[in-house]
Image (cartoon, rainbow, N blue to C red; front, side, top):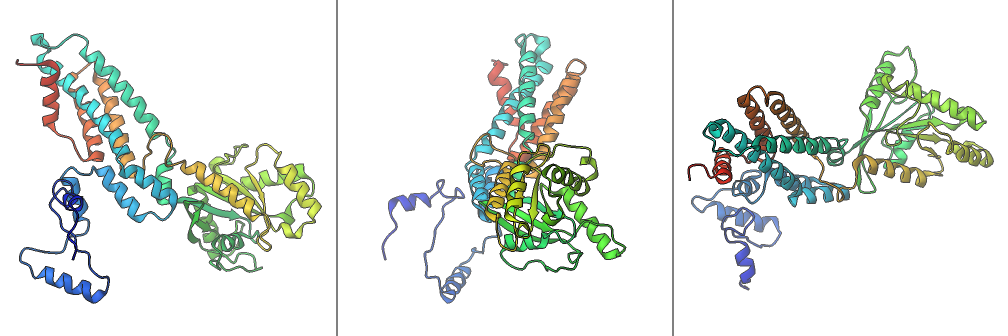
Length: 420
C-alpha cells in the first residue's frame, strides 16, 4: 500500500484540517459489506463513536474555521439543485457575506467602545473632542449601507428557496396543458370539461439554472359548486403570494382588432390580479407574463398580426403567443420566462452579496432599528443611546455567531490609551 504524500498528511493535521483537529481518512472499496465491516471494526475501538449529524461542521465553526454564514453556505451548497443555487452557495461559503457582516460588526464595536469611553471618562478629560461626532457619522453610514442591503427585493432568498410561479386564468384556457408542457409529463389532468382543476398542483422545475416552484390553479370564475369555489379561493391566494404570475388566455376569446384585444387583456388582468393591484394600469414586467394559448386555432396571418401589434401596446406585461398542442412559440415563451426569473433572482456572482436567509433579514432589521434608538437618545440619555448600539451589535452577532465584551474593552484602551 502506498503511503500518503506529505502534503496530504499536512492537510489532515491540525490546524489545517476541515475541523481544525487531527483527522484521518480511510479510502476503502464501496461494497456495502466492506463498509459495514470497517464501521464495525472502528466501533469496537474504545472511545470511538459515530459522528452526530452536522458534527464535523459544528466543530469547524467552534474552531473558527467557518463562520455561521459560511456554514449556511455549505448547507445550501449540499442542497443546491440548480446551477444558480450552486453559484450563490459557493459565493456565501467563500465568506464574502460573512466578511461584509464582520466589517459592520467591527465598526459597531468601535462605535460602542467610543460611546462607553465617553460615558466613563469624558469628565476626566481623557477623551478627545469630537469622538461622538465620529460615532454619529459611522452610525449614519452603517444605516445607509444596511438599508441598501435590505432593499434587495428578496433576490437571494428567492434563489435559495425557488421562485413562486403561478399559472392563473379563466377555465379551459389551457393552464394545465401549459403545466404538463413545461413538466414534460402529465402532472395535471387535462379535460375539455371546464373546472377540472380544483386544487393547486405543484412541481419544481429548473429554468435555465434557476429554480422555480410552478403551481397550476383552478380556473377563475363564479361557480355554485362549493368545492370549485374553494379552488378559486386558493387560486387567488396563490396569485397574491406569487413572485411571478403566468396569466393564460384562450386566443379564441380575443377580439380580432389589436386595440380591442389589448383592452380585453387589460380587463382580463384586472379580474386575475389581487384586489389591491386592480387600480394599476401599468403591470411590472418582472411580476406577470401574458400567455396567449391555442394559437394553432388562429389563421397564421391573424396570429402574426396579433403578435406584432400586441408587442407595441403600452401598459401590458410581456405577451407570449403559444400553442401547447403544437409547441409553437414555446421556445420564445421559455426565453421570456427565464428572463423574468433571472430578473427576480439577479446574478448570484455579480454585485454585492445578497441576503439568502430570512434569519439574516430579521436580525438586520433589528440591528437597523437599534441604531435608530441611538440617534433618538443621543442628545437625551447617552446610556440609552449606548444600549441602542449594543443591541445593534448583538443582533449582528447573531448572524455571524461572534461578538464578545472583551473586544469592546480592547478597542477602548487601544484607541484612547486610557491608564497608560
